[in-house]
Image (cartoon, rainbow, N blue to C red):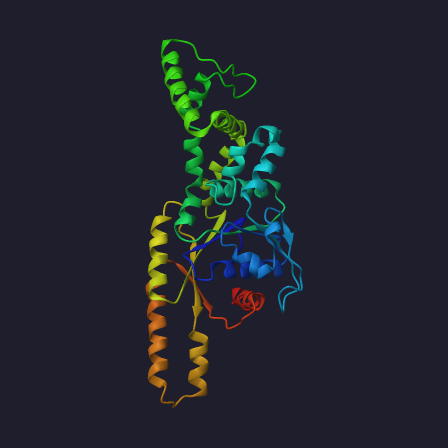
Length: 346
């Protein structure tokens, strides 16, 4: 059953993006309006859907004739933090404050805010209520955990004591905020911060500190958009809100990596989640057995089948729902997606 958010996670090389795309294709073929967002900096989705770098940040409608055997369409988005910050500026009328050199550096694809901006991007689309399901192709491994903990980064960033430091500098955060802090303690703090900033100016240049302070103020003026993302983390824990698909493949070390990833994400994932085992050879082994029942290769065939079954059994111990997907031998990524999309109906 589809849900408002479906998250595909896993380590590198297990076919996570391809499987997420096949899910988007399947749901769209069932008449659902689907948005597929990739947060994976490798941008494998770009190759599959023949999207260009300049398409990043803009929603692309995937043509119905892209995938053989399917005539349905869905939307796709390559995550671009700079584009998200622009949307935030337009929504909060703070475009001028965010037009800052430091903000632009921070919101580059590898500038350090990719995971946080991804959460905000998802929130924009959830609020618009245009789609039945938003599918997230998350970054692999550790980067996926960074994505999940993005909301905690937001919480720390907006810590009240941090705001006070800038108030001591006489900076205003809004029309009701004078930016002034009086008293002996305030003077001591301001003096210490000024000494630090004076040192930084000598090291980084005279304008850097002022631009940095302005960047922080610009982000604080958009704090409502950031704090909205805190609700996203809590919503992910609700079974009626999200489907989790931890993708792995029939390889011992990949399954072990998936178990480690599951343990790290345990505080975020709810119990109603799926283990998607990709690249299964079961259907081919069965066909091989029927075609050559008395072959000298019987031992090899049985060994391969037993090994795969044991790995599936081991992988399934921590999951109530295990979804096997066959290995697909297609050189064209679109054909690969089409074949996997057919498996969802099974």
